[in-house]
Length: 68
Image (tube, rainbow, N blue to C red; front, side, top):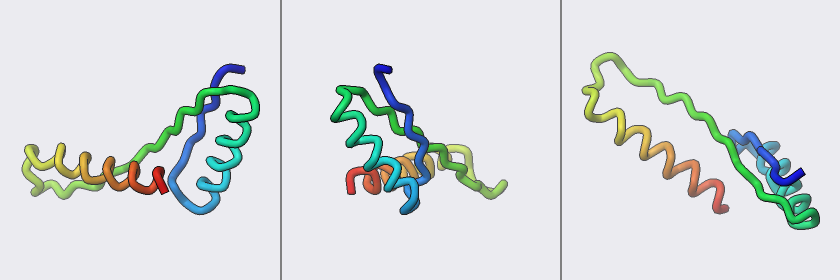
Protein backbone atom coordinates (compact mmCIF):
# COMPACT_ATOMS: atom_id res chain seq x y z
CA UNK A 1 0.00 0.00 0.00
CA UNK A 2 1.42 3.40 -1.02
CA UNK A 3 -1.42 5.81 -0.33
CA UNK A 4 -4.69 6.29 1.52
CA UNK A 5 -7.80 7.97 0.11
CA UNK A 6 -9.80 9.55 2.91
CA UNK A 7 -13.29 10.79 2.03
CA UNK A 8 -14.33 13.63 4.30
CA UNK A 9 -17.30 15.89 4.82
CA UNK A 10 -15.35 17.59 7.65
CA UNK A 11 -17.82 16.38 10.25
CA UNK A 12 -16.46 15.42 13.68
CA UNK A 13 -16.56 11.71 12.74
CA UNK A 14 -14.77 12.32 9.46
CA UNK A 15 -12.15 14.44 11.23
CA UNK A 16 -11.51 11.55 13.66
CA UNK A 17 -11.02 9.21 10.70
CA UNK A 18 -8.70 11.74 9.08
CA UNK A 19 -6.57 11.99 12.24
CA UNK A 20 -6.36 8.19 12.32
CA UNK A 21 -5.33 8.15 8.65
CA UNK A 22 -2.58 10.71 9.36
CA UNK A 23 -1.18 8.53 12.15
CA UNK A 24 -1.36 5.43 9.96
CA UNK A 25 0.30 7.19 7.04
CA UNK A 26 3.07 8.52 9.25
CA UNK A 27 3.80 5.06 10.68
CA UNK A 28 3.74 3.35 7.28
CA UNK A 29 5.27 6.17 5.20
CA UNK A 30 2.15 6.57 3.03
CA UNK A 31 0.68 9.48 1.11
CA UNK A 32 -2.78 10.74 2.04
CA UNK A 33 -5.32 12.04 -0.43
CA UNK A 34 -8.36 13.76 1.07
CA UNK A 35 -11.50 13.68 -1.04
CA UNK A 36 -14.26 16.16 -0.37
CA UNK A 37 -17.30 16.43 -2.57
CA UNK A 38 -19.55 19.39 -2.09
CA UNK A 39 -22.92 20.05 -3.60
CA UNK A 40 -23.53 23.71 -4.25
CA UNK A 41 -27.17 24.57 -4.68
CA UNK A 42 -27.58 27.37 -7.16
CA UNK A 43 -30.84 29.15 -7.77
CA UNK A 44 -31.87 29.25 -11.40
CA UNK A 45 -31.74 33.03 -11.21
CA UNK A 46 -27.99 33.00 -10.35
CA UNK A 47 -25.97 34.45 -13.22
CA UNK A 48 -23.50 31.88 -14.64
CA UNK A 49 -20.49 34.14 -14.02
CA UNK A 50 -21.14 33.77 -10.25
CA UNK A 51 -20.80 29.96 -10.26
CA UNK A 52 -17.02 30.11 -10.04
CA UNK A 53 -17.17 32.52 -7.09
CA UNK A 54 -19.56 30.21 -5.22
CA UNK A 55 -17.28 27.24 -5.91
CA UNK A 56 -14.15 29.12 -4.79
CA UNK A 57 -15.87 30.21 -1.56
CA UNK A 58 -16.83 26.62 -0.74
CA UNK A 59 -13.35 25.39 -1.65
CA UNK A 60 -11.72 27.97 0.62
CA UNK A 61 -14.03 27.00 3.48
CA UNK A 62 -13.18 23.30 3.08
CA UNK A 63 -9.44 24.01 3.02
CA UNK A 64 -9.72 26.15 6.14
CA UNK A 65 -11.50 23.34 7.96
CA UNK A 66 -8.90 20.82 6.79
CA UNK A 67 -6.06 22.95 8.17
CA UNK A 68 -7.68 23.03 11.62
